[in-house]
Length: 219
Image (cartoon, rainbow, N blue to C red; front, side, top):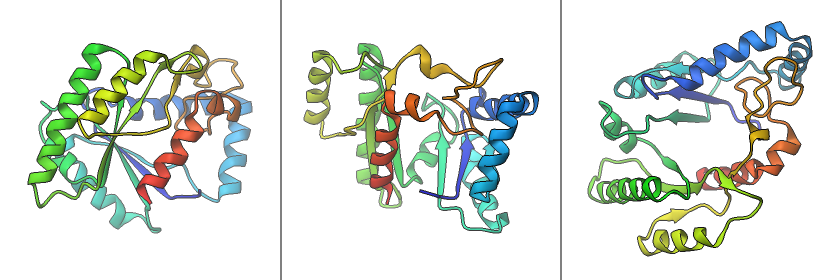
């Protein structure tokens, strides 16, 4: 796809993506296999690693605009990693300025009820707020147990449809194999902010299908 992307890590105070990038840098520098792979990757792409900017939600837009102004090439996609609660200062204002919102859900009653409630409220806010830039809100299944979704998912999907909410066709499977982050002597990588995910692992968890559908939505 070849997009120029940037990531705004707004998940205060965890900043998990920013911490992951720091760990990935250490791993690559201390592992000859990953060091060579990273050099080969960035040489072929003729690009540096995409930036991950640590920021609070109430300052994210300003920092994103600053990044765009200071970057010598056009940034085509900016991803905002949001905190898991709407009680964070500035989160609703920030959400209203997004173009597309993607929210993961799992087949857990408490989790899904909370997510559906928030998504329904957000959709109503969008409908009433003429200044909002949001074009779409999509839910997607995450950590799906097993190779296929169980009948329980059909029940939840009907509830989602009855609420008039969008649900992506693609979903992310759950497996301990997908927690490979390139540490120690591993040669397969799935979770990394520097290295591409192993193609077999990416296909096994349906991440490739998810990315294809996401790109279709935002284009």
